[in-house]
Image 1 (cartoon, rainbow over the protein chains, first blue to last red):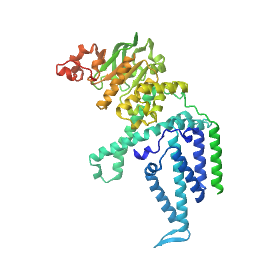
Image 2 (cartoon, rainbow over the protein chains, first blue to last red):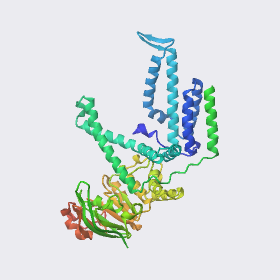
Image 3 (cartoon, rainbow over the protein chains, first blue to last red):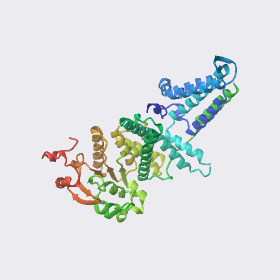
Length: 251
Length: 249
C-alpha cells in the first residue's frame, strides 16, 4: 500500500497542522483555482512557497516524489497530448507528426499546474486529521438544504478508511486466482468477471459487518463531533493566501 | 449481583432455522464465563442478544434487572462487544479516532472524549500509536485497539466473540493478558470460543452449547471430559493426563 501511505495524516506541531481545517479547505480551493490561471513565473513562485510549506510541515521531498510516481506518468501523457495537439511553430517534425513550440510550452505549463494542485492536496491531507476533514465537510454542507450532512460525512470517512481494505481484498482474490492459473485465460471480460464478482460479494459482506459493529457501539446521527474554532492566526493566514493569489494572478 | 439474566430465550432466523432454543442463564457481576461450542452452535447469536443486535423470538434478556429491548442504547453501552473480524470492526481512520468513535456516539463533551480515549489507549498500551492508521497495526495490536474502542464506552460487561482467531502466538498472549487484566479490574467477561486451550485455566464457569441449546453449565474442570461430545478438542494437558496450566506460564 506504499502508493497510498503518502496521502495520509502525518502528526506534527507546525503552523499548518494547527490551522483551522475550514480555512485550510478554503486555501486548498482558492490556491488551486488561482494556479490554473498562473503564468510560468508565478508558478515558480508558488512552487517555492509550497516546498517551503511542505518542509515546514515535516514532509521530506524525496519519499513524496517517489510515491507520486503514478502522477508523473499521468503528467507525461498530458504533456505529450498537449504537445501534439497544439498548433503553432513546428519544433520537431517527423512525417505527419509535428510538435510545436507552443505545444511544448503549453504542455509544460499545464503539467506544472496540475502538479501544484496535487501538491496542495497532499499538503492538506498530510497536515489534517481525517476526523477534522469530516467535521469541516459537515460544516460546509450544513447550510445546503436536502443534503444529510452527517450521513455524507460519515460515508466519506468510511470510504477513506476502507479503500486500503478493499484494495487488499482485491489483491488477495487476484493472487488466489493467479495461483489457480487464471492467466491462462486470455479473455479480459472473463477475468474481470471472475475477479469482480467475488470482490463485490466480499465488499458487501464487509459493509454488513461494519454496519453491525457500528450499531453495537451506539452509532446514530446524533453524536458529538470535533469542535472547530478559528482564531487570529487563521484570519492572518487567509489574508496572506489572498495576497498570494492576487499576486499570482496579476504577475 | 446478577448482571445478566436470560430467561427462556429463543431465536428463530427469518429463513426458519433455529438459532437459540429456550436458553436460561444467569451471570453474576465480575464473573469470567466461557461459552464453548462448535461452529454454528449459537454462541455468536447468544452474544448478539446481550446488546440487542438481535432481538429474541421468545424469552427475555435482562441487564442489571432491565430488559434489553426497553433501552437499546443502555444495553449497547453496558455490553461492550468485540467481534471476531477486527478489520470490519475498526471504523476510525486513525487509532485515536477509532477509540473516540464510541464516546462520540454517546454525545460526550470533547474533554470527556479526550480523557476516555487516552485512558483506554493507556490501558491497552497503544498510546504511542495514537496517530497511526489502523491498517498498519499487527493482528494483536488491532484486537487491543478494538478492546480500547469498547473500553472507552465504559461498559460493565465485555463480550468477546472468538478473540484469538487469526492471531499468532504473541498476539494471543497480548490479548489474553489484556482480558485477564480487565477481569482483575472487576469487569464481567464473557468469551465465546470453539477452542478452550487458551482460556480454560482462567474461567470461573463453562457453558457448553450445541444446536442452539445450553446443554452444560458449570465448573470447567468438571465438564472437561465431555468436551469432545460438543465438538471441542480437549486441551493438550488433559490428553496427556496432566494438570491444566495457565497458558501464560
